[in-house]
Length: 204
Length: 138
Image (cartoon, rainbow over all chains, first blue to last red; front, side):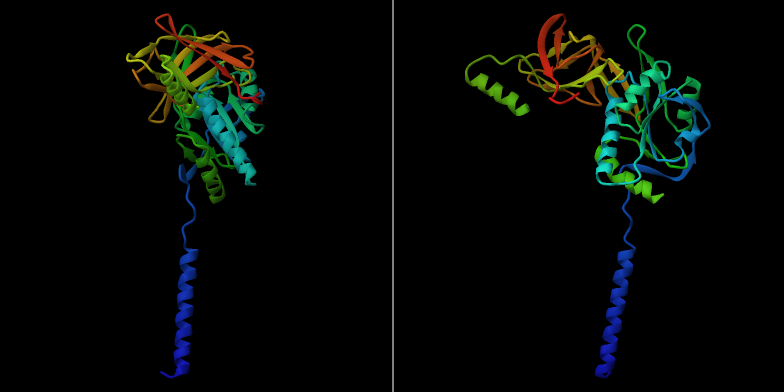
């Protein structure tokens, strides 16, 4: 092999190495959600007839057009419900500070529609940010929506006329087509939402 | 805050003063969410005595009722239950934290700048705390 052929062979070798390097780089796995369980196939929501925190009638189309973080809770719950909504609200504010788009709405679906009238729900959800929605209505319709999404809730008697409601602690992510697309089962941490939401929302 | 409480205890011990039997630290009492009249209390209770202290009730002048509750999450289901008593072990502590044991304060009106809570063991007072909301908090 003459010096000229040697140079050509070296250049070819370098080009091959560069090609392999670029191929490996471009095949690097995309970032993955750390706490969200992303559904392989997003599932549409069932039909329902409920009201929002302003008393307006809403159906399943209320979830179309934006990303929604949906939590099933109730306003007579002083610990886990406000704590979860505060985590979601803080995470959304952090994403806004990072200039991320889109930002999800936060939706509280009441598992205590008997007490959570729109008048009660309105000031409650607005406390957690402007783009926060409360949904309530008939117990049957709430039950239909919840059970279709795998959300459990059950009334438990407490002292006197008082009662508590056991309920799933999960937060669901609904995509702009109104489909259940990912699940945060908790424990709910701001950092997990700030990390996972842009990945899940942009990866769809 | 824990450092401060520990510091005070060490100082009292050095001066020969008796330690308070029950001490609350890291106290936080939430303000009611607008439209609601209930809030939650979180803190660490430390028992400096040789005997367990049973807290069987609590009251607050700012609220109609105070109960000791516990939130548990099992198999993804959040449950909240009233506890009959809260036992603070001898020379030990109990943490009241979000998502766990906590005070549930019910029937509160305008809570102003401070909230007081008194703890009782079978009717006998064992601890009184006064919590001031952080400045600037609405």
